[in-house]
Length: 280
Image (tube, rainbow, N blue to C red):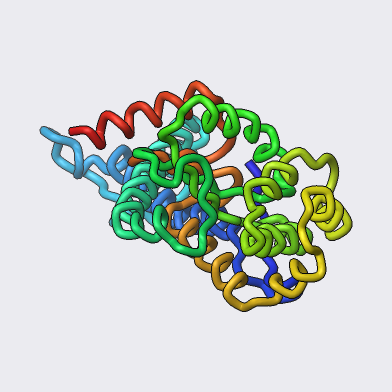
């Protein structure tokens, strides 16, 4: 799964999604230390032990003695730290998932029905699959054939494409070109051709693909400067942050959020489940 820095127009920073990771571990540290200290206090302080009368408590111990006992205990039992970290990470994942699901409910209409987001497959289909992607993401290219097959195998599948350029200026240029190609009614052709590009999807590659599929390149370049295109990219970035999608590709199918590359079978299973849920 790719992540990185998003630039607007090749010069202005829109967002840095990798801050999720740093933020996550930054606020994990304090709770971890508190848990370790509390656990050590409990284990070392007889006053906490049921059925025993305290003779010496941590409050009576000199600071250096208490710290030494805590250190000695942790050195002798390092699994306590591992267990605490694993437990904290599990709780953090659960909290993030809960927040993401709440965001999915709150932003569902924007996710599925934004008039600025290109739509593929059957626009009137009964199930929608949303993809967040970057044309320079190798995992997005890897999963592209499964996307095509899922579309071909399911005439009722609707696909919403969320341009999500997080890998630098070349990706931003490609995303803006794709959204501009929509104005010439050639977005699906441009998108699928870009997903077959090998190497870096830079300006030269983008223009080459545009010419190959019959786009008016002069008009394309003009349309790419429309502020509405940058606004659509920014909305996608904000939506991805809310859904805790901090890399590419990312998928939303029904009530499920997938982060990272997946396979056709998983897509079809989630599409079937979404269709069943819709029929309830």
